[in-house]
Image (cartoon, rainbow, N blue to C red; front, top):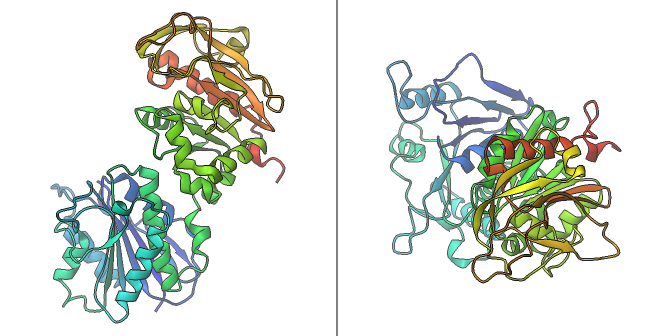
Length: 457
């Protein structure tokens, strides 16, 4: 029997039986049906990433399936599932799901769990999967555990009820918790467990390589952006940037977590953006190895954009900083408050942010007020915009913000660094235009199908 890895992302549209995506290796193996629940971002992202993995055996079939709500002009999900089972007769169902959080009183339906149906050798397999999943989890309360039951609305539960009709089908349900776990972290957990099972089934040989594969071959000629999505990232930055930059032509955006960066994922990207939240917590989520990886990435030609907390993170004036921007803060009292403040572009700023207004009111929320740190091994920064007014709540120093840098650019090695203290990505069309202009500045060296970072390849 040929191996079939059948990717069924449950989305709100009917099955199109004429448009399956099939990749055939021509080698035998089991048939595997992989599903991701509709409306669950990390599960859907992980399924999309898994669909690009290079298989060592068999075929990869990607088939869209409708969601849980039937409408008069759509097939019922149960009917769609039955057609898939009848047509492909999978040996395995792998279901990717997300739960709402952790519950100490009844952990089975919640948290990070793995459920494998009972068969000879299953105990050893599930123990191995749980052990691998927990290698990157420090918090003991958030480690994966084995679940004995499947949620009533899951495909696994439906298959279990039809066990007599599908006696040879095995099921693996992987559930990852949303509580205090970013989308990128959850997607990585789902990828790692799936890869481990596929290796156990001899579908994959190098699980580390495929787990880190985020930018697919067809995306490589584009300008690929990594958004840090881990502890310390908060607010509306990521959704705003996904909307603004994601609408630009020939641009792809992927959420990445600290573990992704520590594992070397940045070699696939042209730009890393760290947005709002807490700079020190973002640094902690990267860890020593992750910070080294970012410095190496920028030094070798990758670009970096920091917004608010991401700008704190870039500074050389903190022990936990990346040290890619020769800057320190004027005061350790950072909680200046929230306000909409006027910014004025400098001559350099008007050249780079050419499509926006020369002055603009931008949302500010405790961003860094910086000055040069005078580190001899880091180039000086250029000021692109200054604050034309200030907010100074919570006993923060008065008078240090007006005419201070609001947007700066610099270089670190061969890479460009742009740091933005306020939040133009959340400040209406004129602020959003500055964000687009920043991206265009970073892309200025992109040439005919080759991105700046990979011109030497």
